[in-house]
Length: 136
Length: 90
Image 1 (cartoon, helix red, strand yellow):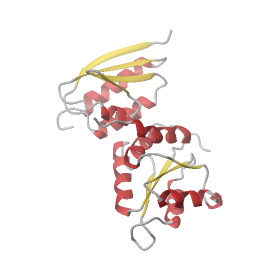
Image 2 (cartoon, rainbow over the protein chains, first blue to last red; image 1 turned 60 degrees about the vertical axis):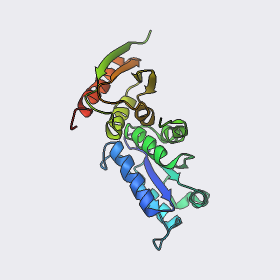
Image 3 (cartoon, each protein chain N blue to C red; image 1 turned 180 degrees about the vertical axis):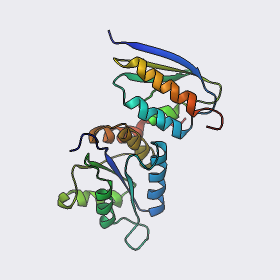
């Protein structure tokens, strides 16, 4: 583990556009694309709505900067796809952690705290605390 | 007893998502507990969602407070971001 590295984040969505848009928003709020790696893994391999284990594996490798990777899924089978990958993590750089977090608020909170240099557990904590954030 | 520091600033613009993120990244780098108060709402300055939830707008007074060894530096950093990022057109 590199102490100067930032935690990477992977967004797993059924929709490529949703994952890409949320990643873009989180990067912008946290200071721009030169900071934390926020990598979208949305849609199926043939471009439809659904999730792809191959896309998630590729995104985790892209997001890894040596401090671990947090994965935030959108709904249902996105969670199942990630869980199946994590059951056999030999192909993945470690540690890779799955967050139980709201998709948009979770990635924004996680990216901001990762940009400040927080470790993987603190980044997971920020994402999961996002359930408590009120908009009004 | 830990050091504490407080400063009030009047916003020149609304506190949008990007400056809120910039502020939370800066605050989270300090050891001190840092908070922002607007009216009757107080937020942990290290939580971007809490900062955005303040809904702070032009002309409102924001009180930045910190408690901890680097409280003074933390308040100075947060106030500088509030002053800069909420400038009209900024």
